[in-house]
Length: 334
Image (cartoon, rainbow, N blue to C red; front, side, top):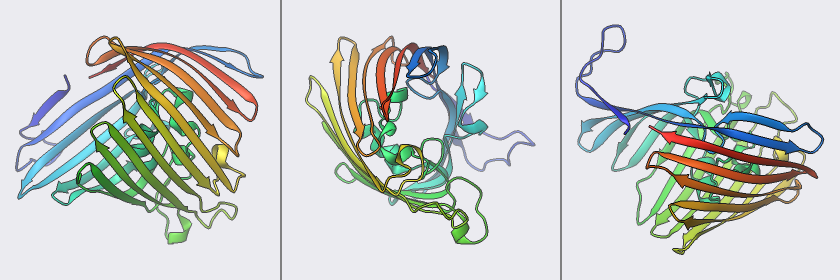
C-alpha cells in the first residue's frame, strides 16, 4: 500500500507551517532483472539492469483542498538505477516529473517539468509496451523521445501545461516549454522552445490519442532545424485480446534515427492477450526512411497487485545492424 502522510504541521527549518491540512503520498516502483544483449559487431553483454520493463522511480504527490472547488497539487518524481544505486535522468533528483499546479472545474494547470503529450498520452495508446520495455518501447520509432521535444525521453523543462476535464471520454491538453532542455537565456530565440498538444479518448474498450509537438530551435546553432512530430494511435479491447495500431511522422528531425531525413514515417501494430493470470504482449514497429524496424514478444505474470515477474525477447534492426535482447526480472510497486 502506498504510504500516506497527513501533514498536520511542518518541522521548523523545513517549510512554513501549513494553515490547512494537506495530504502527501510517497510511492515508487522498483524493476530489476537479468539481460542478455547481442549486437552485430559487438561482444555479447550479460548484466543485471534496472528498469528493463519500467523505469525504477520514487516520488511524492500531494494536494490541498482550497475550497470552492479549487485544489492545489504537486508531483515530484525521480528515477533511480537500482543496479548501482545512482540517480537516473542525468543525476537529477526529480528528473521524471516536477510540477506544481491548480485543479478545478476548468481542468488542471501545471508548471515545471512535464512530459510531452506524444510521450504522456501517445505512447500508452500506440503499443502494449508503451514507453517502456527497453527496445520494444514505442519510442524506438515514434518521435516523442527523439531529443528534439525534451531530453530524457521527452520531458520538457521550464514548461506550462493545461489539461482539460474529461468530456464523454475526450480530454485535451496543451503545453509550452520556454526552454526545453536548459535554463532560459535572455532573448527568446536563444532557447529551444517546444509546443506540445494532445487529444485523448478513453471510454469503454476504445482508446486513442492524437498528439503533436513543434520545436522552435535556438538560433545559436545554425544547423538545428525546427522539427515537428505528429502521432496518431488507437487500440480496442475485443475481450480475448486488445489490438493496437499507430502512425507517426517526424519532419526535419535533429536527433537519433530522424537526423538527416526531411521526414520519417513510422508504423506500429501490437496486441495484448490475457493468458491465465498473466498477459502475452507482442508488437512490430518500423521507421521507414530511417531503416529501423523491430519486433518483440513478452510475458507478464502478476504475483500480487503490486509485484509481477516478466520475461521478454526483442529484436531491433537499425540500418542493417541487429540488436537482440532477452530479459527476465521482477517489478514491485509501493
